[in-house]
Each structure stands twice: as structure tokens, then as C-alpha cells.
Amino acid sequence: MKRLFFLIMSIIGLTTSAYADDDRPINPDALPSAATQFIKKHFQSSTINRAYIDDDVMDKDYTVYLNDGTKIEFDSNGKWKEVECRSSVPSAIVPTPISQYVKKNYPSCVIEKISQDRRGIEIELSNGLDIEFDKSYRVVEIDR
Image (cartoon, rainbow, N blue to C red; front, side, top):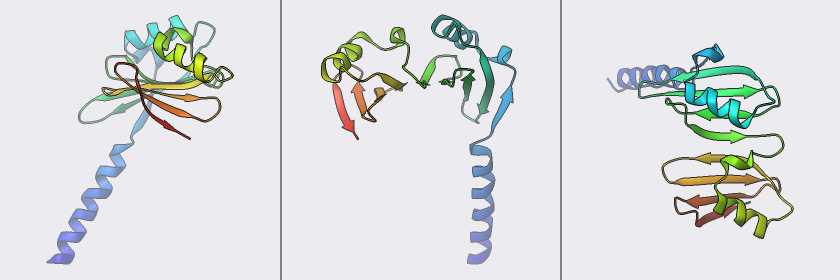
């Protein structure tokens, strides 16, 4: 009986994990309009190389790769969740207090990655430092 239970649980686990990372390619025209507008506004000289949708049971997420190597993740409404660039993240999407903090404390670094969630914003600098800010833009954690 224990073996049967273990077998059933293993099959359920494998099936669930197989669907957990089920990104499938989509036509860029299928992106939410907010995502398309974000790309046009902040990455005017870039074009979309490929776009994917991760259609989970609970929600949809979109991942877009631009021809300049930028990777952008959007939520189901087209609001950006993460932006990762080969050079630097567009300054217009970085909140002013975070930009000022980086300029003051790490003047020789640029922000290469920024992500946001319900807790706050996290950035990755060109020197490899990860800095986490709360919703009030106070530093919560610095990781190397």
C-alpha cells in the first residue's frame, strides 16, 4: 500500500513539475498592450526577437527577449516584473531614490537588472552586488 501511495505521489509530482515550466512561444502581437507599450517606450531601438507565455493555472506570465540581449518579464496585465540588460537598465524605469542611492554609493556601477514584486524592488549592479529595497526605497539587504 505504501509503494502504491509513493508511486501515485511520484507520478503527480512529475506531472505537476512538467507543467510548472511550460513556456511556449507566442507571436509578439499576442502580448498585452501594456507590455508592448513599455517596450516601445523604453527600448525604441530594439525589436522583439522572441516572446513566450507561461500559462499557469493561477495566472499568465510573459517573457520577451529583444535583439540587443535584453530579457523582460511581464505579469498577466503587461506590467514589468523584471528587466535584465547586457549594458544598463533604462534610467526611466528605475525609481529616483534608487538611482540616487546607486550614484552616491556606487558611482562607477550601473544597474544591469531590476525586478519588482509586492515586497519591493531588487537591483543587480555591474559589480555583481544585489541590493534589495522595500516599498519605501529603504535598503533591506545587500548580497554579493
